[in-house]
View (cartoon, protein in one colour):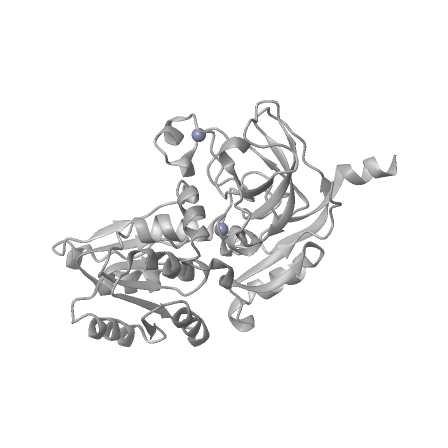
Length: 362
Ligand code: ZN
Ligand code: ZN
C-alpha cells in the first residue's frame, strides 16, 4: 500500500563528501539487534562538530552517514531485550551510546564503549538529523524525560551540558571561591559557564573575540569578560583580574592552537587546563616554562554518565539551558538551519532547534 511505501522512506541530512551534505530520501531505520530501539525524532539541533564533519575534518565519517547526535524523540519500536522503554515513551537521546557491559562501560567511561558505543551517532552510524533514528543499546543510551522540563532544555542535555560539565567543570576541578577563565563563548563555553555556577567560583572570566558573545556570557552569569582579539592584552587583563596570579581553572572551548596557548599563559600555579575543544592541529606546549608550576592538563570525550545528575539539577531550575536556544527551524528547513548555524556569529546564533514536521504522529 502507498502508506507502507511512505513509512519505509524518510528524509535525512547526510554527509556526502568534504564541503557537501544533502537532505535526501533514505531508508527508514529498522531494529537490527534485540537491544535496539527506533525513535521518531521530535527535536534535534546542530553541533559545531557537524560543521567539522562537513568540512572533512573527521575522516572516520563515511559518505552517506546521517548527521546529528543530539535530540529528543518518541519511541516507536523496541527490540526484544529492551526492558526500560516501550512504544510511545518520550526520550532524551544521549550523544554517547553505551552497552553497559564492556571493559570501559564497567569503568564508567561510556565515551569509549567497545560494543557499538561511544560517540557514534552522526559519526560512525546514522544520526539524529532525520525523521527516525536507530538507537543501539537503548536501555543505556536513552533517558526518560521529567515532564516539567522544556524540550529545549532537554535537547541541551544530549551533548553540550554533559560535555561542558564533565570535560570542563569536573575535570577542571572548579570549586567554591576559585577563579575560572573560559576561553570561547560558543555553545560549549556558555554551557561550561552555566554548569560552573553549581560550584560558586569567585570569578568566571569569559574570553572571546566576539563582543556580542561576550555580552551574552555576561547575561548568563559571567563575572568578567575579556576580548582576546589582542592576545597579549587579554593575558594581561586576566592577570589584573586575579591578583597577578592567573586563574585556577582554564577551560579551553574553541579547539585551535591560539586558544590553548591563551590557557597555558593564564594558568595559575597548581591550576588545571581542561581542554574541551576539538583540535585539528598540534599545539605548542610550553613545558619548559610550565614544568615547575604544578599545573594539570586534562582532555576527554564526554561519557554522559552525569546525565541523571544533570536532569535532577535542571529540575531545580538553578540553571536555564533553554536560554541557549536562539533560532527555530522545521526539519524540512534543515538546509537553511545549517546556513544560519554555519555563520553563527553573524546571526547571533548559539543553538538552533530543528523540529520534525515530516513524520506522522503514530
Ligand atoms: Zn556535539
Ligand atoms: Zn560498552
